[in-house]
Length: 240
Image (cartoon, rainbow, N blue to C red):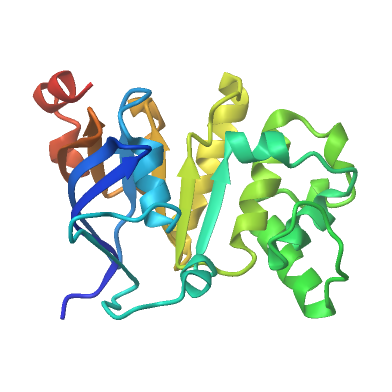
């Protein structure tokens, strides 16, 4: 059997009687990093909700995770997936330090209400060092810039060593310098075992570590394949 991170077959998704995803067929291989690209309303975030298990396909559609086609508890799946988004950042407004915010990833909590173990603190600091943000360990979360917070939340998403990291419009709200810093930060993930899905409507945000591109259009997959082929002008002009 070919190993995979995500396998979706013939997936239609409805919400309140309206079809919000149509005929989705997509497989993400074990060593691939994907960019999911499309205009607002194209179905990008809805597709990620399907990947995250928040939505369920109908009419015999299937979603499988991590090379397992048997039933897997949703909690077990989500424990292997990290998630960062601008929307989540708006909800995470806590009067804690940068290190405490990163440590909260061990408990999947907004804010830190449990005491991290010595091993967890060490792991949190190691990820902060890897991402170049140890200078933020003692800084209060509410005093950080928008870009600093985004990188803190990235470290938070990585502390459990997820097999898959979903970055949903992760550069939204960042000015150009902060965006450049964030994109260079996620490029470092190519040196880890964590694979990535990067959701955007900006082609220029596709970093070198991305291997494949999937275009969403009108709530269905318009085109997908290796990055080099997907970034050709003819494909771009039809997809966006």
